[in-house]
Length: 328
Picture 1: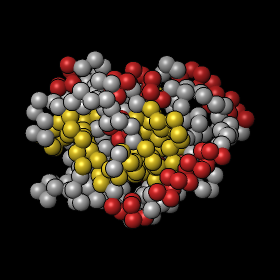
Picture 2 (picture 1 turned 90 degrees about the vertical axis):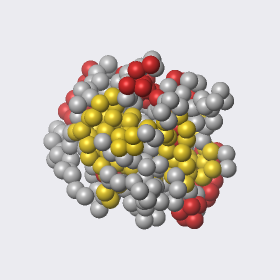
Picture 3 (picture 1 turned 45 degrees about the vertical axis):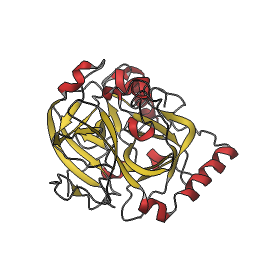
Protein backbone atom coordinates (compact mmCIF):
# COMPACT_ATOMS: atom_id res chain seq x y z
CA UNK A 1 0.00 0.00 0.00
CA UNK A 2 1.59 3.31 -1.05
CA UNK A 3 0.60 6.88 -0.28
CA UNK A 4 2.34 9.99 -1.43
CA UNK A 5 5.61 10.53 0.47
CA UNK A 6 6.64 13.59 2.40
CA UNK A 7 7.53 16.61 0.33
CA UNK A 8 11.20 17.41 -0.11
CA UNK A 9 12.71 19.38 2.77
CA UNK A 10 12.84 23.04 1.74
CA UNK A 11 13.94 24.49 5.06
CA UNK A 12 16.63 27.19 5.04
CA UNK A 13 19.95 25.85 6.29
CA UNK A 14 22.23 27.35 8.89
CA UNK A 15 21.72 29.96 11.64
CA UNK A 16 18.97 31.71 9.73
CA UNK A 17 16.91 28.50 9.84
CA UNK A 18 17.34 28.27 13.61
CA UNK A 19 16.28 31.90 14.05
CA UNK A 20 13.23 31.43 11.84
CA UNK A 21 12.27 28.21 13.62
CA UNK A 22 12.45 29.88 17.04
CA UNK A 23 10.37 32.81 15.77
CA UNK A 24 7.78 30.42 14.33
CA UNK A 25 7.46 28.61 17.64
CA UNK A 26 7.04 31.88 19.51
CA UNK A 27 4.29 33.01 17.16
CA UNK A 28 2.51 29.67 16.94
CA UNK A 29 1.06 29.57 20.49
CA UNK A 30 -1.83 29.68 20.53
CA UNK A 31 -1.88 28.57 16.89
CA UNK A 32 -3.09 25.97 14.47
CA UNK A 33 -0.18 23.54 14.81
CA UNK A 34 1.52 22.45 18.01
CA UNK A 35 4.57 20.40 18.79
CA UNK A 36 4.36 21.16 22.51
CA UNK A 37 5.25 24.39 24.31
CA UNK A 38 8.97 24.53 25.04
CA UNK A 39 10.05 22.66 28.16
CA UNK A 40 13.73 22.57 27.15
CA UNK A 41 15.70 24.46 24.51
CA UNK A 42 15.57 22.65 21.14
CA UNK A 43 18.25 20.02 20.95
CA UNK A 44 19.08 20.29 24.66
CA UNK A 45 20.13 17.05 26.32
CA UNK A 46 17.81 15.78 29.04
CA UNK A 47 19.78 14.00 31.71
CA UNK A 48 18.91 10.35 32.22
CA UNK A 49 19.60 9.19 35.76
CA UNK A 50 21.08 5.85 36.68
CA UNK A 51 17.75 4.92 38.30
CA UNK A 52 15.92 5.64 35.03
CA UNK A 53 18.42 3.59 33.07
CA UNK A 54 17.98 0.70 35.48
CA UNK A 55 14.18 0.95 35.26
CA UNK A 56 14.37 1.01 31.45
CA UNK A 57 16.56 -2.08 31.48
CA UNK A 58 13.93 -3.92 33.53
CA UNK A 59 11.23 -3.00 31.02
CA UNK A 60 13.39 -4.11 28.09
CA UNK A 61 14.13 -7.42 29.82
CA UNK A 62 10.43 -7.90 30.56
CA UNK A 63 9.36 -7.51 26.93
CA UNK A 64 11.06 -10.57 25.54
CA UNK A 65 10.32 -11.56 21.93
CA UNK A 66 7.98 -14.25 23.27
CA UNK A 67 6.04 -11.80 25.45
CA UNK A 68 5.68 -9.39 22.55
CA UNK A 69 4.35 -12.21 20.35
CA UNK A 70 1.86 -13.29 23.01
CA UNK A 71 0.63 -9.80 23.99
CA UNK A 72 -3.09 -9.22 23.40
CA UNK A 73 -4.43 -6.35 21.29
CA UNK A 74 -6.37 -3.74 23.28
CA UNK A 75 -9.35 -1.74 22.06
CA UNK A 76 -12.35 0.22 23.27
CA UNK A 77 -15.94 -0.37 22.17
CA UNK A 78 -19.24 1.27 23.08
CA UNK A 79 -22.63 -0.40 23.24
CA UNK A 80 -25.96 1.05 22.10
CA UNK A 81 -26.20 3.01 25.36
CA UNK A 82 -22.79 4.51 24.86
CA UNK A 83 -21.18 2.61 27.73
CA UNK A 84 -17.50 1.95 27.16
CA UNK A 85 -15.76 -1.39 27.64
CA UNK A 86 -12.13 -2.29 27.18
CA UNK A 87 -11.95 -5.07 24.63
CA UNK A 88 -9.16 -7.62 24.62
CA UNK A 89 -8.72 -8.80 21.05
CA UNK A 90 -8.73 -12.38 19.87
CA UNK A 91 -5.60 -13.85 18.25
CA UNK A 92 -6.92 -12.73 14.85
CA UNK A 93 -9.48 -10.10 13.80
CA UNK A 94 -13.13 -11.18 13.76
CA UNK A 95 -13.42 -13.78 10.97
CA UNK A 96 -16.57 -12.11 9.63
CA UNK A 97 -15.08 -8.62 9.62
CA UNK A 98 -14.50 -6.86 6.34
CA UNK A 99 -11.14 -5.36 7.15
CA UNK A 100 -10.62 -1.87 5.76
CA UNK A 101 -6.87 -1.78 6.25
CA UNK A 102 -3.87 -2.98 4.24
CA UNK A 103 -0.26 -3.71 5.21
CA UNK A 104 2.33 -0.98 4.75
CA UNK A 105 5.15 -2.47 2.68
CA UNK A 106 7.91 -0.15 3.95
CA UNK A 107 7.01 0.84 7.53
CA UNK A 108 10.52 2.09 8.31
CA UNK A 109 10.31 4.90 5.72
CA UNK A 110 8.65 8.30 6.16
CA UNK A 111 5.87 9.14 6.64
CA UNK A 112 5.10 5.68 8.05
CA UNK A 113 8.13 5.39 10.37
CA UNK A 114 6.60 7.72 12.98
CA UNK A 115 3.96 5.05 13.71
CA UNK A 116 4.58 2.11 15.99
CA UNK A 117 3.31 -0.44 18.47
CA UNK A 118 3.03 0.35 22.20
CA UNK A 119 3.44 -2.56 24.62
CA UNK A 120 1.81 -2.16 28.03
CA UNK A 121 1.19 -4.16 31.17
CA UNK A 122 -1.95 -3.54 33.19
CA UNK A 123 -2.25 -5.79 36.19
CA UNK A 124 -1.74 -9.31 34.87
CA UNK A 125 -2.64 -8.31 31.30
CA UNK A 126 0.13 -7.95 28.74
CA UNK A 127 -1.21 -6.04 25.77
CA UNK A 128 -0.49 -3.57 23.03
CA UNK A 129 -1.86 -0.48 21.33
CA UNK A 130 -0.54 1.84 18.62
CA UNK A 131 1.02 5.27 18.79
CA UNK A 132 2.93 8.04 17.04
CA UNK A 133 6.31 9.69 17.65
CA UNK A 134 5.80 13.46 17.89
CA UNK A 135 7.94 16.36 16.72
CA UNK A 136 8.24 18.10 20.10
CA UNK A 137 10.93 20.21 21.79
CA UNK A 138 12.05 17.30 23.99
CA UNK A 139 12.17 14.91 21.00
CA UNK A 140 10.83 12.23 23.34
CA UNK A 141 7.05 12.47 23.05
CA UNK A 142 4.69 9.67 21.96
CA UNK A 143 0.94 10.18 21.49
CA UNK A 144 -1.69 7.44 21.85
CA UNK A 145 -5.20 6.81 23.14
CA UNK A 146 -5.91 7.55 26.78
CA UNK A 147 -7.29 4.07 27.46
CA UNK A 148 -3.96 2.55 26.44
CA UNK A 149 -2.26 4.28 29.36
CA UNK A 150 -5.17 4.63 31.79
CA UNK A 151 -8.35 2.57 31.99
CA UNK A 152 -10.56 5.60 32.61
CA UNK A 153 -13.35 5.56 35.16
CA UNK A 154 -15.53 2.50 34.62
CA UNK A 155 -18.50 1.22 36.66
CA UNK A 156 -17.69 3.72 39.40
CA UNK A 157 -14.20 2.28 39.90
CA UNK A 158 -11.07 4.38 40.03
CA UNK A 159 -8.98 4.30 36.88
CA UNK A 160 -5.84 2.17 36.64
CA UNK A 161 -2.56 3.12 34.97
CA UNK A 162 -0.53 0.86 32.72
CA UNK A 163 3.11 0.12 33.47
CA UNK A 164 6.08 -1.45 31.69
CA UNK A 165 5.24 0.77 28.72
CA UNK A 166 7.50 0.83 25.67
CA UNK A 167 7.11 2.19 22.14
CA UNK A 168 8.55 0.35 19.14
CA UNK A 169 8.30 2.50 15.99
CA UNK A 170 7.92 0.74 12.62
CA UNK A 171 7.58 -2.61 14.40
CA UNK A 172 7.10 -5.35 11.81
CA UNK A 173 7.44 -9.10 11.90
CA UNK A 174 9.10 -8.96 15.29
CA UNK A 175 11.76 -6.57 13.94
CA UNK A 176 12.42 -3.23 15.67
CA UNK A 177 14.41 -1.17 13.13
CA UNK A 178 14.78 1.85 15.43
CA UNK A 179 14.93 -0.02 18.74
CA UNK A 180 12.58 0.32 21.69
CA UNK A 181 11.79 3.51 23.65
CA UNK A 182 10.73 2.94 27.25
CA UNK A 183 8.28 5.34 28.90
CA UNK A 184 9.99 7.54 31.44
CA UNK A 185 8.84 6.90 35.00
CA UNK A 186 6.36 9.54 36.14
CA UNK A 187 6.01 10.91 32.61
CA UNK A 188 2.75 9.33 31.41
CA UNK A 189 -0.19 11.72 30.98
CA UNK A 190 -3.91 11.64 30.24
CA UNK A 191 -6.53 14.39 30.74
CA UNK A 192 -8.54 14.25 33.96
CA UNK A 193 -11.68 14.35 31.83
CA UNK A 194 -10.65 10.83 30.78
CA UNK A 195 -9.03 9.43 33.93
CA UNK A 196 -11.72 10.68 36.34
CA UNK A 197 -14.83 10.94 34.12
CA UNK A 198 -14.26 8.63 31.14
CA UNK A 199 -15.15 11.44 28.73
CA UNK A 200 -14.52 10.09 25.18
CA UNK A 201 -13.73 13.59 23.90
CA UNK A 202 -10.53 13.38 25.95
CA UNK A 203 -9.51 9.74 25.39
CA UNK A 204 -5.92 10.82 24.82
CA UNK A 205 -2.61 9.70 26.24
CA UNK A 206 0.95 10.94 25.98
CA UNK A 207 4.25 9.87 27.46
CA UNK A 208 7.89 10.83 27.36
CA UNK A 209 10.39 8.15 26.47
CA UNK A 210 13.99 7.42 27.32
CA UNK A 211 16.52 7.12 24.48
CA UNK A 212 17.00 3.80 22.70
CA UNK A 213 20.11 1.68 23.19
CA UNK A 214 21.94 3.87 20.65
CA UNK A 215 21.27 6.99 22.70
CA UNK A 216 18.78 8.42 20.17
CA UNK A 217 15.60 10.23 21.11
CA UNK A 218 12.51 8.80 19.45
CA UNK A 219 11.66 11.74 17.17
CA UNK A 220 15.21 11.92 15.87
CA UNK A 221 15.45 8.16 15.36
CA UNK A 222 12.35 8.02 13.12
CA UNK A 223 13.22 11.05 11.01
CA UNK A 224 11.64 13.93 12.89
CA UNK A 225 8.26 12.82 14.26
CA UNK A 226 4.80 14.09 13.32
CA UNK A 227 3.73 17.66 14.09
CA UNK A 228 0.48 17.98 16.05
CA UNK A 229 -2.07 20.05 14.10
CA UNK A 230 -4.77 21.71 16.20
CA UNK A 231 -8.11 23.40 15.48
CA UNK A 232 -8.14 22.32 11.85
CA UNK A 233 -11.23 21.77 9.72
CA UNK A 234 -12.75 18.37 10.44
CA UNK A 235 -13.03 17.80 6.70
CA UNK A 236 -9.67 16.18 6.12
CA UNK A 237 -8.42 13.24 4.09
CA UNK A 238 -6.87 11.04 6.78
CA UNK A 239 -4.14 8.45 6.40
CA UNK A 240 -4.70 6.32 9.49
CA UNK A 241 -2.48 3.63 10.98
CA UNK A 242 -2.35 0.91 13.59
CA UNK A 243 -1.63 -2.69 14.54
CA UNK A 244 -5.06 -4.38 14.55
CA UNK A 245 -5.58 -7.91 15.82
CA UNK A 246 -2.46 -10.02 15.51
CA UNK A 247 -1.13 -8.10 12.52
CA UNK A 248 2.63 -8.19 12.81
CA UNK A 249 3.12 -5.34 10.34
CA UNK A 250 1.87 -1.77 10.37
CA UNK A 251 -1.51 -1.42 8.66
CA UNK A 252 -3.01 1.62 6.96
CA UNK A 253 -6.48 2.83 6.03
CA UNK A 254 -7.36 6.01 4.16
CA UNK A 255 -10.66 7.81 4.76
CA UNK A 256 -12.23 11.25 4.66
CA UNK A 257 -14.05 12.66 7.68
CA UNK A 258 -17.50 11.02 7.83
CA UNK A 259 -19.14 12.97 10.65
CA UNK A 260 -18.94 13.40 14.39
CA UNK A 261 -20.34 10.92 16.90
CA UNK A 262 -23.64 12.43 18.05
CA UNK A 263 -23.46 10.34 21.21
CA UNK A 264 -20.57 12.54 22.38
CA UNK A 265 -22.62 15.74 22.14
CA UNK A 266 -23.70 15.13 25.72
CA UNK A 267 -20.14 15.47 27.05
CA UNK A 268 -18.23 18.69 27.71
CA UNK A 269 -15.72 19.21 24.93
CA UNK A 270 -15.74 18.97 21.13
CA UNK A 271 -17.54 15.87 19.76
CA UNK A 272 -15.37 13.05 18.49
CA UNK A 273 -14.67 12.69 14.74
CA UNK A 274 -15.36 9.62 12.60
CA UNK A 275 -13.59 7.88 9.73
CA UNK A 276 -14.77 5.01 7.53
CA UNK A 277 -12.17 2.53 8.79
CA UNK A 278 -12.98 -0.57 10.80
CA UNK A 279 -10.03 -0.70 13.17
CA UNK A 280 -9.81 -3.82 15.32
CA UNK A 281 -8.34 -3.92 18.87
CA UNK A 282 -4.63 -3.17 18.88
CA UNK A 283 -5.04 -0.17 16.56
CA UNK A 284 -6.14 2.05 19.46
CA UNK A 285 -4.01 5.17 19.56
CA UNK A 286 -2.88 4.85 15.96
CA UNK A 287 -2.36 8.22 14.30
CA UNK A 288 -4.43 10.01 11.68
CA UNK A 289 -1.97 11.85 9.44
CA UNK A 290 -3.00 14.64 7.09
CA UNK A 291 -1.52 16.50 4.14
CA UNK A 292 1.85 15.09 3.11
CA UNK A 293 1.91 12.86 6.19
CA UNK A 294 4.01 15.15 8.37
CA UNK A 295 1.09 16.28 10.61
CA UNK A 296 -1.11 14.29 12.98
CA UNK A 297 -4.70 15.41 13.42
CA UNK A 298 -6.44 12.48 15.13
CA UNK A 299 -6.11 9.01 16.64
CA UNK A 300 -8.08 5.76 16.70
CA UNK A 301 -10.09 5.63 19.92
CA UNK A 302 -13.26 3.49 19.73
CA UNK A 303 -16.05 2.05 17.62
CA UNK A 304 -19.71 1.27 18.31
CA UNK A 305 -20.74 -2.36 18.54
CA UNK A 306 -23.89 -1.61 16.54
CA UNK A 307 -21.90 0.06 13.72
CA UNK A 308 -18.36 -1.27 13.38
CA UNK A 309 -17.82 0.36 10.01
CA UNK A 310 -16.57 3.57 11.60
CA UNK A 311 -13.81 4.39 14.05
CA UNK A 312 -13.97 7.54 16.18
CA UNK A 313 -11.34 9.65 17.87
CA UNK A 314 -11.03 12.92 19.81
CA UNK A 315 -11.02 16.16 17.82
CA UNK A 316 -7.57 17.73 18.03
CA UNK A 317 -8.06 21.15 19.63
CA UNK A 318 -6.15 23.36 22.05
CA UNK A 319 -8.60 22.22 24.72
CA UNK A 320 -7.99 18.51 24.19
CA UNK A 321 -4.54 17.73 22.84
CA UNK A 322 -3.04 21.18 23.27
CA UNK A 323 -3.29 21.20 27.06
CA UNK A 324 -2.17 17.59 27.30
CA UNK A 325 1.14 17.98 25.48
CA UNK A 326 2.04 21.54 26.44
CA UNK A 327 5.59 21.55 27.71
CA UNK A 328 6.30 17.99 26.58
